Image 1 (cartoon, helix red, strand yellow):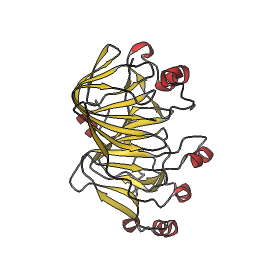
Image 2: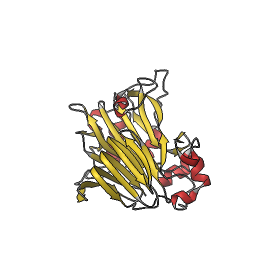
Image 3: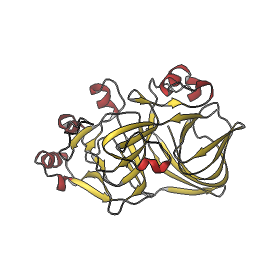
Image 4: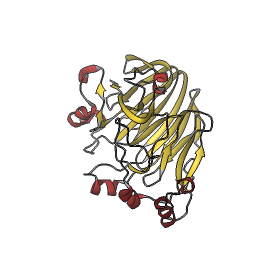
Length: 312
């Protein structure tokens, strides 16, 4: 039985209303994030169907670990979200597991990745540093040389970027993105365009911790992706690392899907159709998120849609 999840909307000072284009009924016009699959304490998604209907994902993870292959982690390891940056996000950095465990009460660190769903003309991201040394980068930041310190890249729909822990980054204005990440909500802001007076958000900077975790990273993470045709459907492996694998499927017709791990996270980005799980038929459409569990042995996708599947 697939576990369908209710998204959690997070208001952000930089958010907008573009997530309505994915079929969401938004509570206001400042929604920056929709957490599609999450068991994080800052937002655990409600299950919408089956015997666990009405329960939160963190509760089911704790009490029915057999649905997830008895994975040994105390916390659900992954989180997926959609991001609408009407304005630029803060320029920030995330810690790795070791630093977060020590400084953030045992939380996961945060490596993440972005699939660009939509981008306005000349929209850009911050992706790493211009400097080749950490000391030079910190000097630039401390002197307020923000125009020179950060590597800026103009982006297009369909592009993908992996952001490992320690890499300085930001999503710029006019970008709609899908994100798979470690289940963490730890962010150290470096620069926030002098925001912080708005009553909707407290925008403190975290420069001391940012100095600790900033790393100079090789910016070749946006490398050519592995694409293949399976049963006349296009499969693109966007990323595979120590924390997660992320695959985009473009399906037209019928796909007999074999789960690569005990459980996988599925998000429908475009189109509609149905998924048949061990004989149970579920209608699916753009904006829906669900988990295929260890109990789900036979899965068939039918329709015309694009989806992203993430797993350990």
